[in-house]
Image (cartoon, rainbow, N blue to C red; front, side):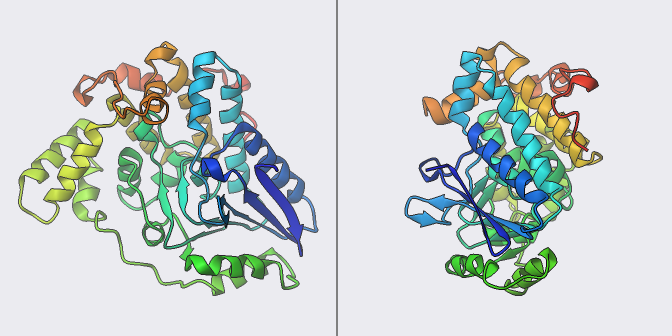
Length: 367
């Protein structure tokens, strides 16, 4: 059975990610199937709207998508497999297609929604979460950066929320995702099937009617903010450099105020991340804040090329991060350098140098 199931029912295009053993982690074939499906429906007058969901081992929903297939990234990088380049070019093209889709695209974000799963959902006209949602851009765990348009959508959150989420990889519940602006509404997980079925029952006059109906089924009340969303967080993560952020966190952690424990926990998280990639991510989010989506995706395509090729492959922070987390699973990445204070501004800047001239960029056609 295919890892991506597509069907049209009552003028609604329905997509189910069907790779449950891998938590619906995206392969290149899945990216291609999703792209082909959306392109076929884009100009089809018999399709008014599109909805996407994940599956789990016992049925549908449960998990949306855990991201890209990082074991494939590791194997392909070490083997020099050109499919690695194809994956990121085609995935980012798919992300752009979703953000610019002319028909309502609805994401049912139950369970795990991370990395590439955010790329499949953040461009949606309606982003639905549940009490089971676990949402994050956790790429700094593996020496990568929040890609799939992460620079674009994180940088547009209020205050310094984007810097905080991008640097730490902080996980969000469904309610927290709504509160920070990464989801549009929450429902109980046991309502998902009813809503999914409801999309295909009426005779809709147009896609707008589908969206209006779905919005009417969801509690519009914005949940209370997560505990970490406070002025100290905004102040610290607005500082110019990662070094200054870590110094400010260290000072906060020495105090007895309400946010001292948060500061210590956050500092511990940052100390375990790749120092180099923390500095790269901070630059990414701040550069993206003044970019449109297409330019952000082109920048991220440059960056991901450098993640695997700026250094010899055995010294790539991304290859090492994946090894430690998902291959050897020792959770002891050997970052180079180990301290933010030793990160070279020249090496950070190199991540933003285009590897291709404009006319040859793999995402040159995005508008």
